Amino acid sequence: MISLERIKQDKYEIVIGIETHVELLTKTKIFCNCSTQFGGKPNSQCCPICTGMPGALPMLNEKVLEKAIKLAIALNCKVSNISRFDRKNYSYPDLPKSYQISQLYMPIGRNGYLEINNINKNRIGIHEIHMEEDAGKLIHEDVNTLIDYNRAGVPLIEIVSEPDISSSKEAVEYLEQLRYLLIDLGISDCKMQEGSFRADINLSVREIESEKLGIRTEMKNLNSFKAVEDAIEYESNRQIAVIENGGSIIQETRRWDDNLKKSISMRVKEESNDYRYFPDPDLPPIIISETFINNIESNLPELRDEKINRYCNTWGIPLCEAEIIVSEKNLAKLFEETVKITNMAKEVSNWIIMDTMRVLKDKKIHINDIKLRPENLAKLIIMIKDGKINSTIAKEVFDAIFDTNLDPVVYVKENDLIIVENKEILREKINAIIEENPQSVEDYKNGKKKVITYLIGKTMKVMAGQADPKKTSEIIKEILEQL
Image (cartoon, rainbow, N blue to C red):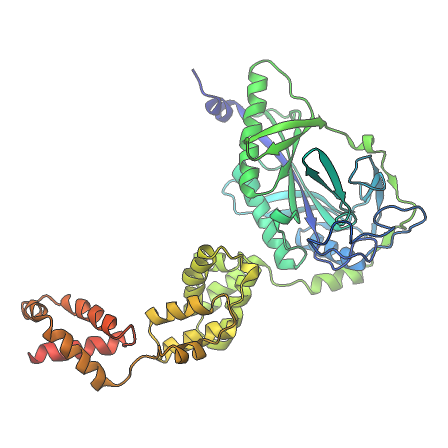
């Protein structure tokens, strides 16, 4: 019997478009002065405007417009010189006004693309990006459903891709690249666990080489890249199985259940005319001058690929290391500021790739919560260079100062970790060790040079790591040669 996976590969292709909702890094909401801070007491960050009280008039937050234009430029979109807000009408408990202010007819940007590194294609088309307000949040507790309107009115940008994606891995790569871009631009922190980066997957299947698109479903509740990948694999297999068994796909909205690893039908999918869009009468059209657009474009920050090229070409950092460093904004900041102090890019890269990532994983700390300051990492690296401490002690110091504000120089002094530089003290210790290991002397005389490594280890243990390995090796060779 032919497997479903084989049928999928030989007969069908997947067509995917992604709607990504991004919560913006602004202090206040899109149409009022309420705070956007995450985690506030329920219903403590809302006002008559964001809860839709009669007579309350919205006013556009200019920072939202600037961030939307910045993203449109970075996504190679045509920025609209005239943009407008529309009302999307539907009733749901988390929408206090019974409509959402969004953009349908005149979005802020159209017809762009995002570069990706896929072997088969190098860009995904961007149909449009538009500004809108977020809805509130439903909280389900036992048999009760509560509503928190703190999130209502939080500014969003929705990025709508073209249906150019054809696999789960390609979808994840697109979202990863989009996330990197948003963070680099300072538009969003993109914390999926807090809902500031959310993706809805529109998916259909069709027979290979068919020009007609299949009926699509939309999947929501995807809160990780792994969930995106799993959901696409499940839903594409589900649709193919329905078609192969003679059934028909229904255009619907489905919810992804990450515990069950399956999508569950929520409701029949609405079309745009079901929402009865019309221009918002309380918000006038936005007239955007070319000067305003050009000023934003001229102040775009250095983006991820530009950073990687600079790290590789200027500082000689291997590509794989550069990609890890730029994967998080705070990691890149720690790297660059430490390099400025030490002028030792490769050494700094090693400490970030090997030790910073190790401790982050061991202590389950997110890079955004790191307390290690560039000046302290720089002091640690300089102490190693100057021979004040060796690599073994340095790792102990690093672990101690990582999530504190401890000065590594002070820590080394207070814990008496400075390398013993007195050669006579070191020679005395080594002589005692060699006397206790006569077999090592015989092995050395018989040409077994590896015995030196053994004796260095013994010395480091006796000296509690406070011996310089190079000096230790030199003294051991000198004594053995004289015996």
